[in-house]
Image (cartoon, rainbow, N blue to C red):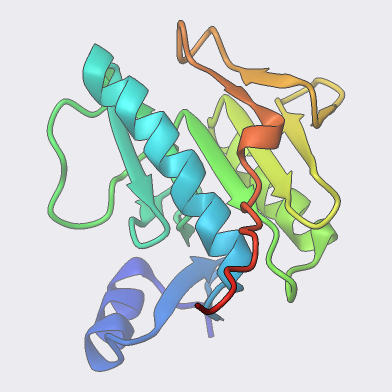
Length: 185
């Protein structure tokens, strides 16, 4: 049985504590992220939001914001950005468009193959850039439709000038800090 957006909304009302996506007519229940991956998601989101908000470029949301894509899937990337001219006002429900930019941060239980498939499905539906972040191996992969993925590591700078003029983030600034032990006095 193929489910619809209305079915997903009803299920979500019945189970508000669960995050769900609708993919090819099937509901996928999303599990919580690992601590480190969520910290990195928060870091990229805050760096992105600061620049976007200051320059009034558009909207930045986290993993609880769902998008109804042109193929009727309802998906929620870890972080998303939509240009201001494409979404002048925030909808109360799901946004009915593909975001311009998405980020997916690999959690310990995530499959790289599945994350790449998710990003590629967004690209097929109109997203311009998808970024996969791999905290354990300290690399990021920038994916665009009909282009070879570009991999960046520590020492490199992430920039997406066609969508975010002036925004740059050093890759090594994305990773979780390790604090020194403090001796008890």
